[in-house]
Length: 236
Image 1 (cartoon, rainbow, N blue to C red):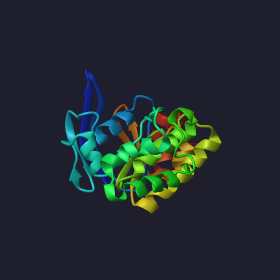
Image 2: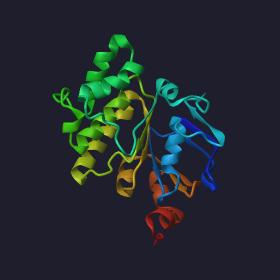
Image 3: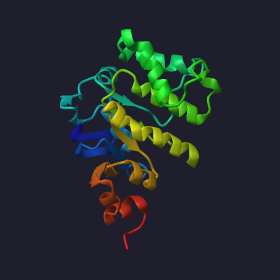
Image 4: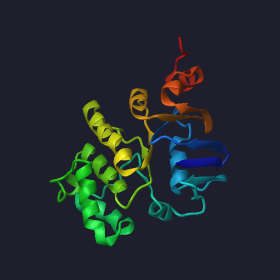
């Protein structure tokens, strides 16, 4: 479970997150809002890449606010980025191993790498260089990197960006199984309201850095204020 207490982030004179206070309790949580709402900034704060002006981040009751990104990762917090971080000169195995070397028990490292690669459907492509992967395969490598070393929470920043409908559904089919298999909570940014509705049990809506709504996904997406701010229409 992730708890965000009174998070405030400012860039110059712009308040990107405004005293955000919310508890993420569902196995899969959607994070939505219009462009510039503060979604990626929130993931950056949670993962330690942006320092808040005030407030705290807790994972499973442990305060993370003072920790570096690497220390948060060792405690079980993982994330992907909008622009995937696959190293093209390394193979699929080596890309995942680069993370496992820092996070996984060395005695079980190879087994964890193989299991992560197999779980995302890339078995047989372990020796393929990153430069030869298509976009979906690159996204799957990024996902595999989040699965090693006992993740407790995985933050996904638009994991389906750039994928076609078939590829996106394949990716989300894989994602659906991870909380049950690993016991890891997921927080997902996505602009596809239909995907959020089918995938996330709880949804958080940000609007200009403020919490607009939080609750069961269906109720949130049917909220008139949310429809005006995010979906661009009022409920009938």
